[in-house]
Length: 263
Image (cartoon, rainbow, N blue to C red):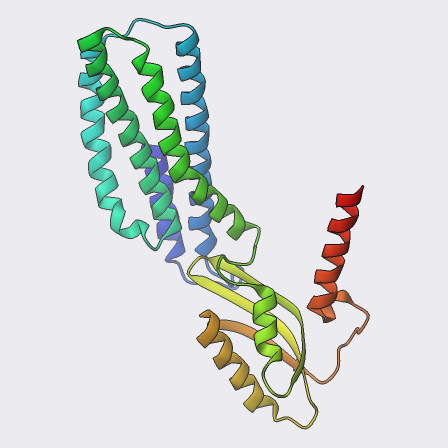
């Protein structure tokens, strides 16, 4: 627990550092890396708990319910308190959210131990211990997997959720004077900082600056992307390149998918 909190805090402090000559994007990805590691550790924890739970289902062991409940109660109070402190920042910060879910996971583990310990004291059914453990695994997976997936997507520079590259291209191409959009890339440095770069072919008689401002305003209004670099040109430097037309790239993807499906 202390390690995950320290990692989240250190990453949070790093992200506040300004950009430098060697790190022109700053340290925003430090928080994403911390979120990835914390969520990965949570997933490993869930696997470990599941393994122990299944083992105890097959080979039950005696459990000292009273002693277990006492230790778990102290852990429950501490973990819940830290989780509540992190809850507010977890809404907008993936790094803090990963630390929050780490503490929530530990809180559920402690609560599960208290419940199973009490039930065992009352009934003597030691099988309740592994059953509660498997239930806790489900809760941990529900919180950890989305963070793991989102942080992985950011690190792989995937298009952010809720944004379609083809829709962005279509929106730009619908603007009068724009003839083609290519080399379009949309990614997030971190979930709150979405970037866009693109080459846009325009009609020769159009005023470049006026058209550029129109494109930027449309993208910001429709998709919420504020940081973009757009290169205007009157002809594609390599017309045969699939990146000069996103439709060619999409068609090639569909052809490859169809080939794999038939074979």
